[in-house]
Image (cartoon, rainbow, N blue to C red):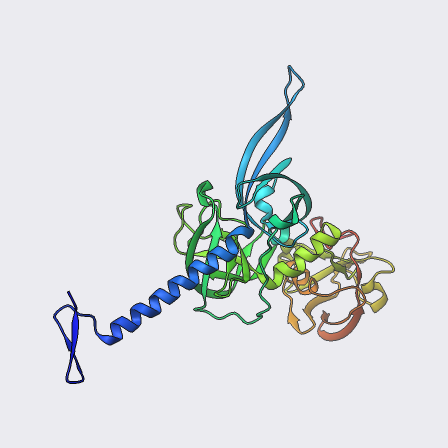
Amino acid sequence: MAMASFAAGVWLHHPGAPALADREALVDLQRFESATVELFRGAAPAVVYITTAALRRDAFTFSIRRIPRGSGSGFLWDDRGHVVTNYHVIEGANAARVTLADQTTWDAKLIGVAPEKDLAVLRIKAPADKLLPIPVSDEEELQVGQYVIAIGNPFGLDHTLTTGVISALGREIDSRAQVPIRDVIQTDAAINPGNSGGPLLDSRGELVGVNTAIFSPSGAYAGIGFAIPAATVRWVVGDLIKYGRVKRVSLGVDIASGQIARRLGVDGALILNVHPGGAADRAGLRPTQRTAGGEVVLGDVIVAVGGESVRSAHDLLLALEPHREGVELPLTIRRGDERVEIVVRLVPDERAERNVESDVPS
């Protein structure tokens, strides 16, 4: 039965007939749903299911046994078979397998890990026509309220889609290496165990983050999930593919641990040792020393790098990581009661900056 009729140029609404505004809203909703459906269809083939195992030798038969460890999500990074996931998905495993959207399973080789960013790269040798990577967003300025979708394998349920918005930006979470991960995206798109390592996508189907953690008193989803931003993922994955690790630069110093700095009442990155011939040595930075009489003379304290405030060894590490070898970087240091500006020329970090856990040097 018709819900409305047309008479004398006027729509006559019968009881229960939707108003024009309601019909337009319904059309908009259908368009929105269709866009989400198409986005999922385009992105799902790039999302993978990762299972990990520990290899153990049987004490009696000496054969190698494969003991399942866990599972998670990941996604295809390029058409060469590189797969991005979280470090904690493959942590402690001896072997990993990747299942693609067509349900084919491939042994994976570990290419590189960055525990301090909770990222890892695997590689599979699958035919090129099966490798359909997700495009990475170039958008630097995300906005709170932006629509996002998460695709992953929560509880082993493959290719599950959840939707939400960017709830907040600039969050900070701890990594497996106990180094903060900054500028993290907070979302209310449901992220559950097994979603780790899966992509967070914008309304164009482009990667804006890698789902990595939830905040929950119970361990289940509570409306607060976190994703490592694409801007961080891009350069970290590039380093992992090229070098197998994050390639950092060095000042050539040993920095006091937080415990030592607090004990000495220092706010900043206190230099304990300066490596001979390193960037800091050439720039004239001074280490902490102990006089013949046993008095501790504090070394230079780095309080800013390139204008970015530094209050700890972790802050210094994070301030240096975007920079590359050969860059001349201004440092603000506190030397006694004075603030001094010094420019250092960065060199490759062959051993990584250390947080010195020993006491003040003698």
